[in-house]
Image (cartoon, rainbow, N blue to C red; front, side, top):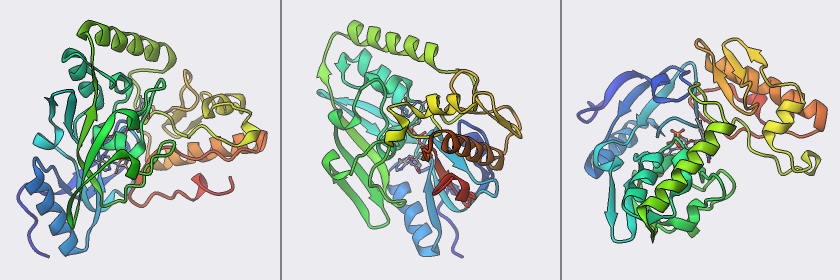
Amino acid sequence: MTAPPPGVERDRPLARLTTVRTGGSADWLARPRDDGELAAALAWADAEGLDVGVVGSGSNLLVADDGFRGLVIKLDGELARIERDGDRLLCGGGARLPKAAAFAAREGLAGLEFGVNIPGTVGGAVRMNANAYGGELARVLDWVELTGPDGTERRPPERLGFVYRNSNLGPREIVARAAFRLSPAAPETVKATLADLRRRRREAQPSGIKTFGSTFKNPDDPRAEGRSAGVLLDAAGCRGLEVGGARFSEKHANFVENRGDATTADVVALMAAGRRRVHERFGVALEPEVQLLGDVDAGPLYGAP
Ligand SMILES: Cc1cc2nc3c(=O)[nH]c(=O)nc-3n(C[C@H](O)[C@H](O)[C@H](O)COP(=O)(O)OP(=O)(O)OC[C@H]3O[C@@H](n4cnc5c(N)ncnc54)[C@H](O)[C@@H]3O)c2cc1C
């Protein structure tokens, strides 16, 4: 094996890079600060035949208890920067979305307010087509710059295959940068909207817990009769249900909470139990929203419950 580029570290724990705080270590971890460092890390992984994973804020991520056999990339430095360019906001893929929303408000730019409550990065938001309170990422996204082993390509939102909580990005397509096309507005007005959205979120969701947010997508199965995943889980008796150190939140049944010592196996077993109960009661097969990294035994989370 050739030596990794400078700064690439061996055997790095990943739990602390996720909001649910479970899972093992990555064989390799790179925190590239600019395009050159990102290209060097990807070229090395390619030459060594290593799998590549990307971690943003880890707010929608479940890492295998055995960790990840390959290179994990976490964007930093220039690739996490937020800048204004006229009515556009230019963000590194590793920039945090709530920070970008607050930055835009201070600059008197409207359109990114929905990001204030999404505790992920710009790259993670693009990959997941993140949304909240009717704000639509695709409506304000101008372009994204994707970096892979063969170089960098700029793509408009129409070519990102956005569907509910998903895009067409492959595992080796890294959102290095994105531009948002925003509208001039009074900073005080945009800030007031952010404050209102934060208040609404505090009332609706638990705070201060280790979680990855919504566990399952809201189903479009007619048997759900328009009910959200949280309502179905609640009606199926999952609120407060526990497996090991993992529990469905008392405040929001579609949130899994790590009570302190949960493993990823606990979380998966709890999710499988929730899915089974909803299927028995309503005939609806819930689909996970959370993304998996590494060798997670995900059999019980897909297919027939
Ligand atoms: C309390 C809480 C509330 C939440 N509320 C919402 C909400 O209202 N709406 C909503 O949509 N989501 C919500 N989420 C889920 C989550 O914040 C979003 O899905 C977010 O977009 C994930 O971004 P991330 O940077 O944390 O991605 P991660 O969790 O780190 O990764 C998620 C996926 O994106 C990929 N990825 C990350 N960065 C990049 C990149 N630069 N390039 C390519 N791929 C990348 C990862 O490989 C992985 O497949 C919530 C989560 C929590 C914990």
